[in-house]
Image (spheres, rainbow, N blue to C red):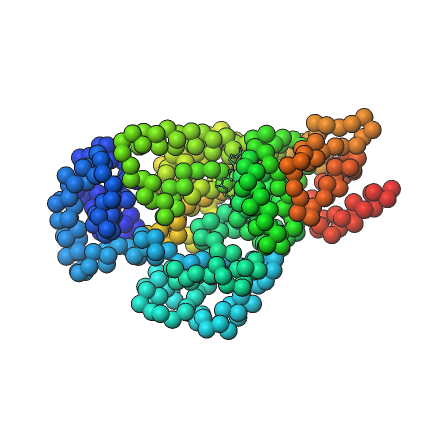
Length: 464
Ligand SMILES: C[S@@+](CC[C@H](N)C(=O)[O-])C[C@H]1O[C@@H](n2cnc3c(N)ncnc32)[C@H](O)[C@@H]1O
């Protein structure tokens, strides 16, 4: 049995289910066969149910053979790590480093009768906690600011959550900020930012120092985001209600941006509690395929736009979708269009679950799933600017930034976008908007200065 692919893939292969039932797409089959063999039976009706019902005996016999081979008695013992059920995804807690530290949070939980355990991996933690009523938690093995609690642990009323010291965020959704690895003081764009989980995480990893320009086209979601920023004491984020596609990559405001997060709208098919979305009749299936197509087109346009910012070094693309169309296919198309300037990197080397090998290099991407990683379904790709391109940009611009579109005759740069009513700033003011262009350029050419030194230099220039 191939454990990496999981038991369901073995069953598909041995019963030739997907070959016999052409109408049955892989994702639907995963959910339906899981429900039939390991869950509470197939809930939906229609054509897809018939596809499975016709093969019910073959599927059940196959399962019985696999149990004998694996020498197990219960069906669920065949599941790779027992994590496919919604209820068995652990509760992940992200530490907000702006307000606290890992040490302090661990101490707090220990003082409140939680026991810090050190299992070999999440799999043993999940198994242990299933059979125990003790309050336990562990440090995540991949992400230094994430703690793991048993599935179903409700911390919504916990004082640390209420005060914004910790956030309840799925581990997979914590991957992009770590993969981005923006140092403290960096300038970052979060292209599709609301409700702000990635922005607030990036801010936490940057110690709240630097700038995060956060865009979102949905004003209501941005309102939620602003509340989250306040609760988490994030001060380096500026939100703006607009389409990221309208943001000018040559705007001098973004000339120090070297890091971009692209986490666009997606089908959400990786969210376990939404798996039932797959169970549908044929008409809905056609609609969903059309929707996927248009989502992928949109995702590619946002990613291509991010890759067009001239001084960007790292772009992280992520979705909470399990569909190749929204993941590897989008990355492949973006590489085709930008391969002269960007290459794919392989972040988090210790993460074993990788992109589907549908084009050379796709396995550098990260995939996460309930059955292999105890998270919701997720996808992350990291684009890095080629060194030759960086060198060329440095020579081309020689420290001088591209011209901004609105430069006034008196040399004062105005920020039309920043002055819009929909703009909201968390502490960052628009001081740059009133500075002469020459000054802004001079400041930006000192990329390597610490924020403190930059501020000092800016004040000195202002006095001149
Ligand atoms: C997956 S959600 C982002 C989640 C967010 N990154 C987080 O971690 O909390 C996608 C977001 O993209 C926004 N969006 C859709 N089209 C957009 C566009 N053209 N420009 C900017 N944001 C857009 C949606 O309103 C939605 O809030």
